[in-house]
Image 1 (cartoon, helix red, strand yellow):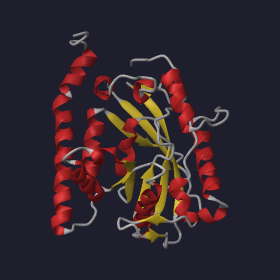
Image 2: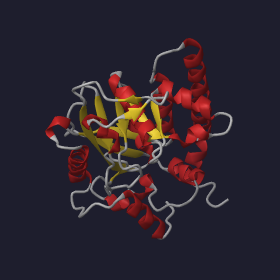
Image 3: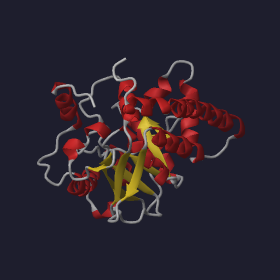
Image 4: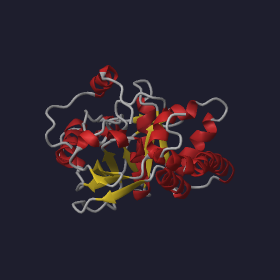
Length: 304
């Protein structure tokens, strides 16, 4: 094997037992929470979710620093809209124990264990969304259910990892704040009843890679974000495990009040622009997610 005995490869090899623990433990805890929810009707708990996310961050030697310019995290029911730099952005989830985290639902379609994963994930503080036109009302039904029950929501409105670029943010998830309905698990139409819900934008940047400050050098973020690296998931995970350390910086912006905006689009544009002013102040224009993905596929492959 190429460079199997290099310092970086040996660092990754030493992390393998911890990586196996994370994978097996996360899967086992999901099954446990699924059974517990079905049998005992247990309430939502993020303790195991946050434990295994922290463990995964340790495997990837990824930590999250809070920017000194951060505003306090609101104590109101909120929707936290986060800029998505890379897959290890999930490391921020334990910072928001009051929030369920929105994720794509393709894991729930896994043969045999899909429904177990779904129920366990829901009990652990995740929301599985279809992110399709056909499933939009069901997705909104889940958002409305959480907010009406006083649970905040944390999610990536871009729906794709984009490193330092900010693509257009979807307004769909905040439309219930402006009267849009959803459907519940029984197919009944539901509306948001809770008032005083706020939007709190979150800016993420790559601060350090292997001890080098890259906060203001986004052209060096590739080792952390893996943008343009088209290898399979395991290969990219292995490359990340080779790294000595990665530090993300999280800057929490002041809450936005929906009543100060005329529409969901206006609200999300303001949240997007405030985050862009921090992450990429020199960016001109905003591409749609589809345009970014097409560009991504057209670019030369890079390995980090």
